[in-house]
Length: 222
Ligand SMILES: C[S@@+](CC[C@H](N)C(=O)[O-])C[C@H]1O[C@@H](n2cnc3c(N)ncnc32)[C@H](O)[C@@H]1O
Image (cartoon, rainbow, N blue to C red; front, side, top):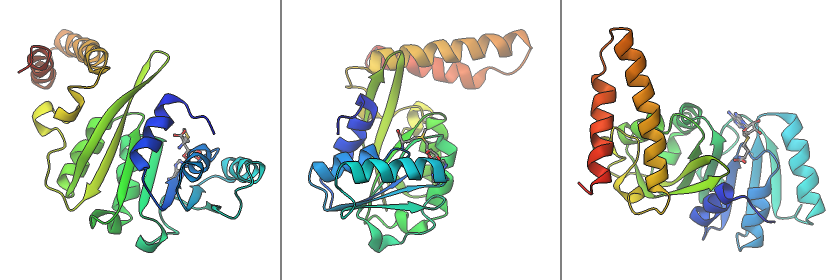
């Protein structure tokens, strides 16, 4: 199963793994790919029957029904710590990912590898992780067309930073990523626009000023 760069990076962060739970599996491509690359089994779960039906079709077409189970459920509601050693939650908003983890406190114990790929609000997810005892072990970028996606490998029971010094927009681990320059430029444009909007409305721009200052510093290696 060939994956797009975003899901391929998520798969690389999942491996090695024995049993993976993929929340919001949609097509189940990630589970199929992980089993092809050595995972013993996988659970492909989704909250909606439509995507789950597509997942079941793909699983059957790949002859993997004995190793990839499809489960209809919201978040991690149907699962406990014994159901997997690795949990992936990709392609959702950062706040949704945080709410799924919050409803499954066993993910914070440190015994599970979590692979998270927020489509939006990555900074809110990073801040939530930091405040709930999770740490980012690895973080990297993938590009698809004009978009750059962040993928994180996270563990509970950690005290490592989640990028607080960078306004939770990235950790130091991203600084050496070949796509970091482009990623930082996108952030710069976003926060310059936001700053201009606030300034013309007479609002406080200190948040944007702080972010733009930090982006300037990291671009000069500070
Ligand atoms: C944009 S797709 C991402 C699919 C795949 N994970 C990926 O990254 O390519 C989001 C999927 O998450 C599912 N989803 C959204 N909220 C969910 C939740 N709370 N629990 C489980 N699945 C959810 C949707 O039904 C949809 O299939």
